[in-house]
Amino acid sequence: MSNEPPVRTLDVTAEVCPFTFVKTKLLLEDMKPGEVAEIRLNAGEPLINVPRSATESGHRVLSVEPEDAGRTRWLVRIERGPKG
Image (cartoon, rainbow, N blue to C red):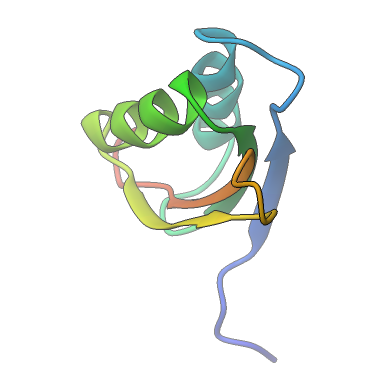
């Protein structure tokens, strides 16, 4: 049995701000503290706003990594905080 927390995934590449974080927030609210979400999003506003908003809401951004060579799609890993 792995000690890794369960990972939930969400693809918001078809969404625009503010819906990118609205959907991320809804997912995080449905999770238990310590669980990890992987959010797939586009560069630009979503890449700036989703990690910032998650941090401001009490969650922890674990990583922000490009998924493609052109750096147009990104994968953000967020650990749900105790309150969120």
